[in-house]
Length: 580
Image 1 (tube, rainbow, N blue to C red):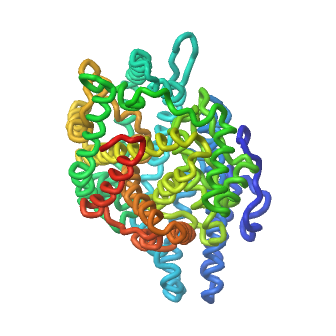
Image 2 (cartoon, one colour; image 1 turned 180 degrees about the vertical axis):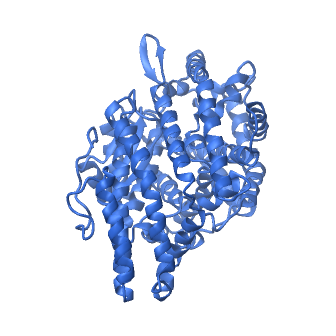
Image 3 (spheres, rainbow, N blue to C red; image 1 turned 90 degrees about the vertical axis):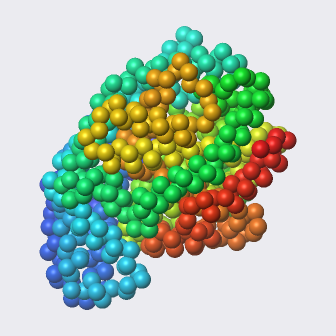
């Protein structure tokens, strides 16, 4: 694939089943490999032979997954490039629809195989459970619907990636504009906020159209699979074996009870320090003492070097891993026009190497993002020697523990970016950000609960549901005269469009990460060792066991939240001489 920052990387293990020279974008070359697996399965007469068959299936799946990842990476790095868009859409529209029934058939073969019951139970129980789920939910009628869903998701990314504004004679991306919201000049902040908000509003109708189509598709997918609504289908599809929609609602209530008082205290303190009668949307990210914005780096390469220094101090294994990514050019970190929004880590499943994508512009949030995505990357590196493809990734709820814990653990050495006073300020900003993201997580998750448990709802009803949640979790900022922007604020959250119900995981995982951090404050070496051992488990154990391995409880109620909120309050009171 052209236009990738890295070249063709060697496979972690030499291929045994997939030919060395095969075009994995050509179905006529892929199909015979599935034919061969179907033929070989009945020939397995011993457990050893059956396990070898599973590894051959795993090898094929990893090779195909890497092909998909390479095309996705190229497309998101260059959303304005016709070649990368065409290659990505070819795989989505021509390859994936044919892969799904063949993977389903292999899952059926596995479940029906006479040797399956002779496999070591502890080794294969999670794989067995997840394969059962795959077979349970698969519907051939949903394959074209899922293809259309992926196409619409790409439209959203292309649209958002194309948005720019003219600011003082220069064209700037919306991400680049965000830095001005940290400037002490309030008029400049307002000008910036208005410009970006109005640019988003210009696309509101298109975004609503895309989302209406996505909702209808998802409702049909759920109906085809025999579910009363997409909410129940999605929880099943996401493999949420260990918690329910009711547990999520309990989580929302806990955030309202334990987090919102802290948010309101922080906002009151902010308003008083800024000497404002009311906080406006453009007052929420500036330093409340009116200091100029933190500037951790000027160039992306400086960010990479400082991040390396953090890992050099934190852990030798992590340091080596990040250095490898840097050497192999597995990083695309700068913001530019035509690049998809956000940040992510994608694993190249055959090379078993991580790639990090982000949009750095030289702000503190970039430091948090690179540490976050590096946590995901170290998770991928920790499972490199796991031969079963399905176990080289964990449930999202724990993947995010890996990343969010790394933000907190790495923060101890953030002087790699800052002077001592600015480092304290950055730590405070980070902790405030953790507090403030919980209500947004609750808003986004509860909004999706409402959307997908109300099939056939109208746009007006959807808007009303959003505004109810904004009143509940939005804090005390004054949006008067900017109501339209508030109504459409959810358009900026790509997860709602691209990954339905994938957002509450951040909140669940943040509680886990705060527990890792709390453990580290008591016994740094043990907490880090437990964290690394848990990463190495990949997805081989159920979610509560992964949390336990990292020294955490898999709970997200008020009882678990309360002491962690207390710890954050205590730490905030120590930093910068300010009190909460």
